Structure formats: structure tokens, C-alpha cells
Length: 102
Image (cartoon, rainbow, N blue to C red):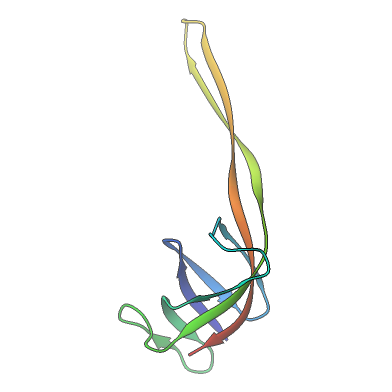
């Protein structure tokens, strides 16, 4: 069974007992979160919401918080001697999908 769920403004395809990396969520590591914006539930019978599936929810456990890979931003203006390099790392949260209720 799988589901399409909206988490922090983005849509993800989730399955039970799988891990998912999303943008940082305001939750403690080890806590349980329930997402109610389920757009589609698939399996033997597919349920499509308009816009969400009524009564469906996804339960996940927060495993850890971390940072993603460094993204380098390089700016340059030709023939002016201007160069600037900047780095950025996204804050991420690792979730384990516990159950999908349809």
C-alpha cells in the first residue's frame, strides 16, 4: 500500500516501513507525527481525493535531524574582477513511515 501525501507544501509518495527525507519539521527526534493531507491512497483499490481523501492519514516517526549536501553558489561578473563564492546546506528531517490509514 502506498499514498501520496503533502508534507510542508511538497508532495511525496510514501510506503509503510520506508524512510523519507523531507525539509526540517518542528518535531523532536523520536516523536510521532500524523499527516492528514493525503491526496491519494493506492493498493488493490485506488482512492483519489478531491482535494484530499476523507478519513485517510499517514503516521510517521521522526528518526533524526540533519543537514544535506553543500550547494555551492558562485557569482562572477566578467572583466570586473568580481567573484563571490557562497555555500549552503539544507536542514533535513528523516522520517520512518509507520502506517497508512485509508
